[in-house]
Image (cartoon, rainbow, N blue to C red; front, side, top):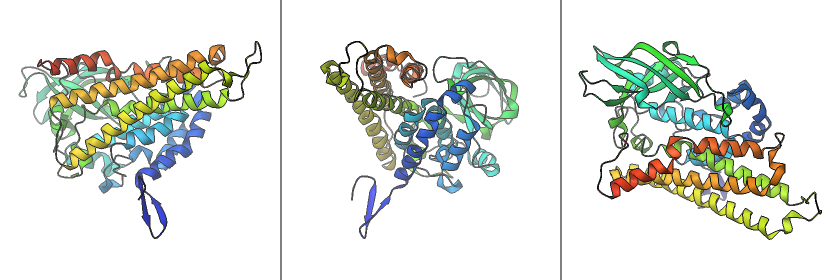
Length: 404
């Protein structure tokens, strides 16, 4: 039996993960062709959204009981890498929106039935910046106010997972972190997304003004730290026992990986027969260029190994009903940030080695460079934040990340 392939009577049957990786690989060229249009629109083009729905990629982590694929968590690396080779902005939206199907599987079953009972294809956006939302405990639920930035893919989404803090003085303990699931009729989209990178993600602001959210449409962060969740009555699989925020970097890290691999693939292809405009020397003969290719490739391959092994190990632990301790969780956040840093470094090496040719907007390199740095700017990929917290816990101090 080969990796990810089952052999039966001399016939090789692709695993479900391979099927979805192939679908992403097939879509990538079209996504690349539309990349300029996606950036201009600052959101997914209608054709891209239709292609993604048709491929089932949005639903790769959705429970099988409602028609999803319920793939292992490593799909967020393998599938998203292939999409990001074509367009990292599209990959960013698929990884975000796809992961919310996974998270909805941890909400109370009533919330799942409300969303998926009406439309199992419904897209769900998010903003998990807890201090931006203030919630007051009221009879039957919560009263939510706030304005949240960076709600990726919000335009085509019917629902939104918005993070908030339950205020002191409520029936619940003050400062509790909860996630609130709101229908699009209950929040306003504010067009703030004018950026230099990840332009096509449509990561706009949203606001909610004194919106009532029933108990069953909320989820406490402490209930998704690993192990059984309120949704376990409906979804017993190991995918839905993973610690959400400990693994949060790996929801998005495949975007950095695919963007960097696409950049390297392009660089190699463009350099094979390229000659210097000044002396017609063949660039492939330059040892410095050869070394840059090796350096970038080593960084990307190392990043892939880190990302994939962590996701695979996390599923093995969940199958064994094991939950990582706090130190292990900070290590996951540390390694998630570090692996994306390797991808950013690889793109920087290739951009510098490309000289002035990388500056032209007609090429893909300038976009890949911008995307790499936009991805790296996400707080989940700040090694200063993740590394410092890991060091704190290693030294016996308290964690400064309350979501763990």
